[in-house]
Length: 107
Image 1 (cartoon, one colour):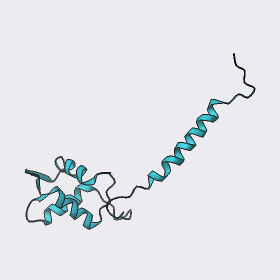
Image 2 (cartoon, one colour; image 1 turned 180 degrees about the horizontal axis):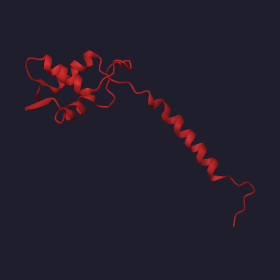
Image 3 (cartoon, rainbow, N blue to C red; image 1 turned 60 degrees about the horizontal axis):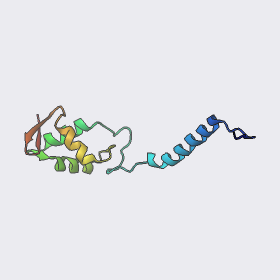
Image 4 (cartoon, rainbow, N blue to C red; image 1 turned 90 degrees about the vertical axis):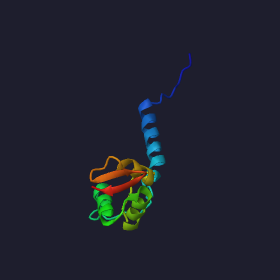
């Protein structure tokens, strides 16, 4: 049997470990988006922005065209791969009609 004169509380060790994890993670909270971040007043949801772009267009648009228009408007994307996620969400988005071949138009 080994005998310790100093007993270390596992609670204090856990507290130290949590603090270290927070310090390691804290720089990742400031994620850079692909577009400039808008003010809280300017911030909107994705669906109305996409529908507005499609209604202004006279012809059907591809995902890349919609993405480029959103970036040009300064839409603040919050996900890591915005073009990929946008392409997935377009198929289920209300007010957007998929035409096939990667083309979309407003309903």
